[in-house]
Image 1 (cartoon, one colour):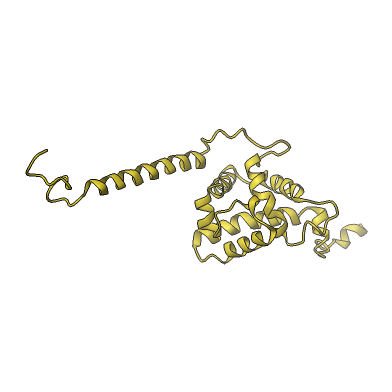
Image 2: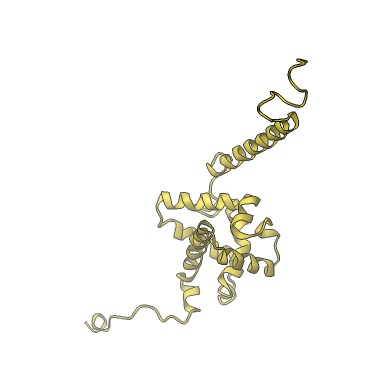
Length: 193
């Protein structure tokens, strides 16, 4: 040990202790590990097998993430259609995705991947808990908290996910009839010709 350098410092001018340096190294390594894992998840390097069975676009992990949200999000829309359930709403959403561009679908899947991460879910929705682990009342609270979030990205993510889900369900003939909307006006002149 050099007698000119104090044992608790690397150099006399920088003020970094060994303990501080080790803490910094630990947290830096943790951040890099989490960042690498999150980047792999968000860039599609997580080894996804592709769409779930019976779906053209939605993956199994998307179904598991979204299935619990269907009933509280549609607020009685599923119950209004006899025999309907979350999987019918998700199938309608999958059909809607066919009309979107690859870029739009890619952004949606990035959001769904982001919601798989507990920290990101907390940042966007206010809860760490996976949607499947929440009771119905908790899910309603989670959706309300997410909808009321003042963060620009959180609000954009909420609308970007929930509006297409609701639209996909209510454009199905079965669900559309439950809204009381009679449909577009009929062209009577074309009928009489």
